[in-house]
Image 1: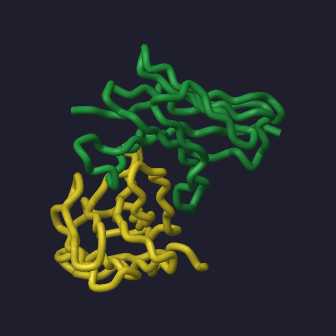
Image 2: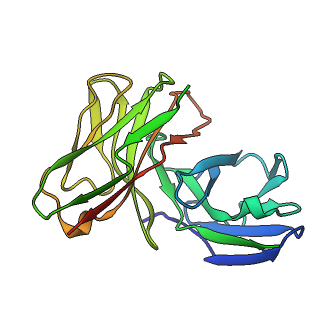
Length: 114
Length: 115
């Protein structure tokens, strides 16, 4: 079936460096993607989303890039801070009209070293 | 707004016991969902509701029941707890907006252990 997955399960960076978290998807018809951040012991928190008619979207210190040719998206975090340490998930609505259902990737654990 | 609240935060059950996980939201969101999160499995959808009186099954519904008598509340019932239901459970809600955005608001989670 269709799935959303991640290339790297863990990522360790130094404080101040930029972080890049990757996500691959298999459904070429997917038209919307979301990134969530989950801190230890908390529920996921929305970070940023992107539609398939866009290649790039920027937020505060975060940028999401979408490459539809290779079905890949990435989340870039600029000047990574200790507070960015968390698990990051990409997600997409389940196709078939049920856009209230999301399929989540397994997540990447980002650790920021001081 | 309190957002999405869940109770209890922690629960230990014996195999065969039943219980209800509570979820409430004060944002007047039409859509509510229950997910379970297991190590290495990501979040998996158990049940969801698109409005009061309407519920449907998600990816892993077996062993769970839900009801949606009001917009605010969406309880999840474990009928006869099994060790395989040991997990962290998250409730989420979002507005019904045609074409998105599909941002869901998640509760803090309930950590359930079944022995």
